[in-house]
Image (cartoon, rainbow, N blue to C red; front, side):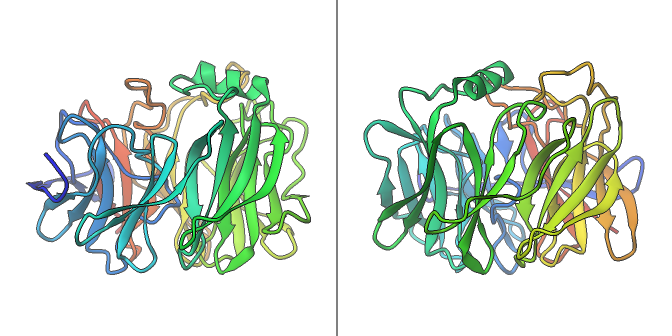
Amino acid sequence: MSLGHRSSLPFQHFNDAQTGSNIIQLTPNNALCNRNYFYQKCFTNDGNKLLLAANFDQHRNYHLVDLEEETALQLTEGAGDNVFGGFITTQDDALIFVKHNKQLIRVDLDTQEHTVLYEVPKGWVGYGTWVPNTDCSKVVGIEIKDSDYIELDSWEKFAQLYHQNPRCRLISIELKTGKRSVVFEDNIWLGHPLYRPNDDNTIAFCHEGPHDLVETRMWMVNENGENVRKVYEQDKNESCTHEFFVPDGSKMMFVSYRPNSHQRELCSVNADDLSFKVESEMPACSHLMSNYDGTLVVGDGSGTPVDVTDTSGHSIDNDPNLYVIDLQKDSIKAIAEHNTSWAVLEGDRQVNHPHPSFTPDNQSVLFGSDRNGSPAVYLASIN
């Protein structure tokens, strides 16, 4: 199949055995399909179309799913798509993604025309998820020296890269010109670059690695490279993970957890003054994402974390549920079971992670799971 090919994609409908939630399986069995990273835009603004990646052909490429017609339009082709980092622009006119860890590419959603916006320079590798500012005029990303880079196809290599202290730089790219600015650079593994919504002057990033080894995970810096600051001072035995900005830009939320405890905390810092708040105790969820104003949060129940060194101290029973936390009502409820295995598949550590997020109308949750034997993408109704 090639660019512009439209596939029929008959959805499968069933009800969750525990909650009765309406579940829609959007992608077929016996394929490798995944949604993008949980804080990247995946729905068009009207909620009718969805970006996902699937190997309907030889390679796992991006497709735009029409949720009313139950069809998938092929947007990219060939090997090398970063199938988690792509996003739909604020204007709903394009997909932007990284190819072969080297090219930042814009794909017109109507014509599938590809335009290279930026090329990673020789001696560097484009790593991880690159994230836009609010109006999609810039993206922030991470580049790693190619002599330090290794393919992270296992959790053992994830830990190995941490101990290597690779040379990394946090960069900002103007999409109209391709101009790159280096915001911050150090001999430490950097990840999770984020523009604060509605505030281009504030960029967040993390010190990546096994959570129980990273002493201070979350950082912010001004876009001009000034005022590098800790977001939050962790306790000695505290691990933090999966930080994200609430889409209105008011807060950064994250997961906090400690050894020998099945409970985790949903925490936040005010994005202006970094004042800290425990928003809610919660079950052992791995990924969290909020609605636009941060009043609702969805999380995916998980088991013993694989991204720690002390797995015995963090050993917990697997929790197969998707939870919605209502911070206005101070309530937590399981809406459905995701039942994913969390398994690494063909060197992909992320493909069986649920990465849940809300639909634009807050009525359903999008998530991934291999509950039927292969990675697929689902919608679960909240009510």
